[in-house]
Length: 469
Ligand code: NAD
Image (cartoon, rainbow, N blue to C red):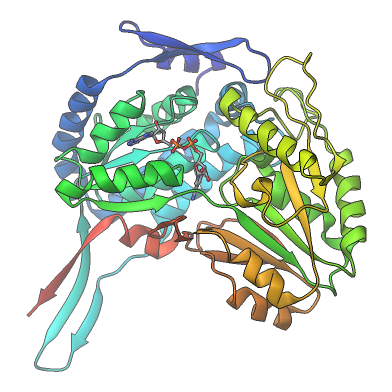
């Protein structure tokens, strides 16, 4: 276990170009990140390719044991990792934020280590015997976003390692320190060169996606970048898992209890200050209980403190970067100008340092408003009134993304009927965005393809091979 300063020193480059990373809550310097280029990527890929065969040869049990030790190492450094994550990403230590994210890293490492995966006997009829195995791919590229930088990196690397692959990680240019520190800690339990971080920009990501020595890319990020990766990976026919953008709808049925669901609705939408792919981004509420749901949600929102992440009182933080702050500001302003009613928030304090945007609820908004149809990825929730379930389902399904969705009701059978009609990779009932390492997760439509987590997630990091005979 290292102190916070020792951890930061360990990931600070001794030579080469660096970039100062600033805390989005305060503008203060957090640390220096290396600026890696395509040559660094080449070196990392070569090292990974050299380390991978011996790792694959260890077999599942030994690799799983190493992942379990890596989970222990993350837990030993949990507070230092959470502090760095909070400073760099902005998310508070408390609430479903930095400490929660580091805890998730340990949990997902353990799950990838412990999920059983046996060869499947597909046919065994006395004449033919066919077995389906999953072999290592080789070197996997992992490209990630800035919203949950540590946890998403673990989601990508843990199953890859369990399946006998090496990994080259390309973190977001907004949050490289969190990923460098996480991998530094995990690497204490792994062979040298097996996992490395190339802390570069879009050019490095683009090269990784076309690199002939990379067999698969795990990508989490925007739909636009996902499309670019599909194109650049085409020449080498790479395997891809794409976890892309979303704009999740939630439908509140007329029988729901507004008081009982208000807190669940709030965290479904505002987890990580709304910077979450599978967060509730559009809320459809039946006209019978529309005003009550708006009032209850406003009361919950008003009670949730937002501020600097290291202050233990806060559960909401700033936007991670100016670009995201500008997107949220633009979309809320467009909603206000269209005549929608701002129930709370909507007026960022220009004097306050940092990219803080207040928790914002917008009522009486048209379903075609850009705040509804675009992924705003921040702390603003449009609440749309509906009168028939068919209308709400049609509106929920109208977009070309479909990551998550939710149905809120006291009648489970009715909620499940509505859930079955929604076009989304996951439909939650009376909750939203709750992920679990045992349960597969992935998008429908342009939210991507491929599944993460559970045994399906392991299979996605292997090459299926049939032994027939
Ligand atoms: P982004 O697409 O801008 O960047 C993601 C990563 O891709 C970064 O590391 C970036 O450097 C890299 N990149 C950029 N251009 C590239 C290219 N041409 N080739 C290869 N790599 C390239 O996304 P972001 O703004 O960091 O993250 C927010 C987005 O991520 C949102 O749309 C959100 O919904 C999505 N997201 C999805 C999930 C999911 O599980 N589906 C999870 C988290 C975030």
